[in-house]
Amino acid sequence: MEYAVRLQVVKILIKEAEHLMNYLSLVGIQIDASNGKVSVHPETPEPLYSKISDKLVQPKARIVQEPVSSLLATAHF
Image (cartoon, rainbow, N blue to C red; front, top):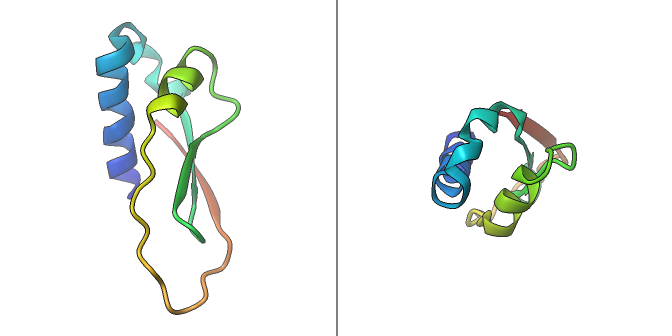
């Protein structure tokens, strides 16, 4: 899932703001394992935050029968 989110972020930056690709390492993405929600970390600087958060598509979550502990992971590229 992390690879798919990274690919989505790169595609967004190439399409919307290619000149900001040099700052990809400043982007933080939060992935909530309990519900599959993906969001841009609040500490990601502008205009990266706005460009990515407006275009970020939520992955289709699988229905999990067993309980999943609430885990929030942050990925930096």
